Length: 392
Image 1 (cartoon, rainbow, N blue to C red):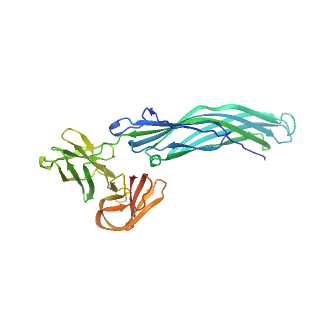
Image 2: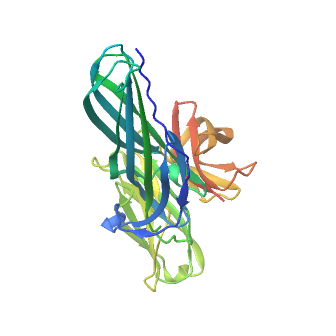
Image 3: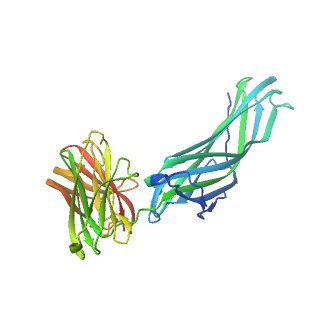
């Protein structure tokens, strides 16, 4: 048996057009508002390369919050298939030609698949006229479009780039006619790839609200915050959510006229009920006397004891030191780790907690700016807590 498959792509010229443009939204923001789309495009001229890597810029988190990511591609391909009869007698062959192009990226997979049947081809004995046949060139893909989507994947967030892999596989086999032949396939493919970031504007932060904490105690959550009351009649509305997007008011506190120009400590207790399961979220909506609205950071409480999320950090972005706040009082041996998006531990610190939920973590060797994960490992109870942080 002589069965040879050739699947190659000619000369790799690669054009990247990374010019953002606005497109219609595919995702929504809080309240059902359409997200804003920014698209980058990469064009591959006709090539026989069997594999190549193309690159997009990451989403800049200073623009807003990444809601989802969508890849849309349009592929054209031309295939030529040939076969040579190696048998010493005349053989009638039925051929199957396959070509599969696959595009992969973080959370993204697109497949374009072609299966074609050719023949029967009656080929003369090896070494005589008529012992070979050629099929094509055939347009197996003609602007064949596909799309795939993922959520706000952290791999797409930052100031760097994100890579996609384009790979072609396939070949030609005889479905009928014997084993003594030599087959080859040449496929030339071109395409355009569009990556769209759908993002939502971040809520305006209430910079006058500091040290906002949410601590679970028994069957209640204690909310506390400090606020610089620069005006009279400032109202603080406590808001609650079960999905981190749709918030509703559960209570409010107001500053007194005497509090103007002072820093005041506020307290609010939320009593848990049987419908509160999984994770719940809190934030403070600040409304000044002129009706201007701003919001605190969102605090998450994980009601599952084995959960992997249960800490918040401030300030965030981090400059030199970050305060790490657990959603419950902690006792035991811990390791705090700063981890980059590739999973590498950049810095770690061991500590013992004894009935506290607030610790400091200083960046001794300041890492590069970008998005990181701060991970707290509870060695005493075999648990871990994680949250995203931005380093400036």
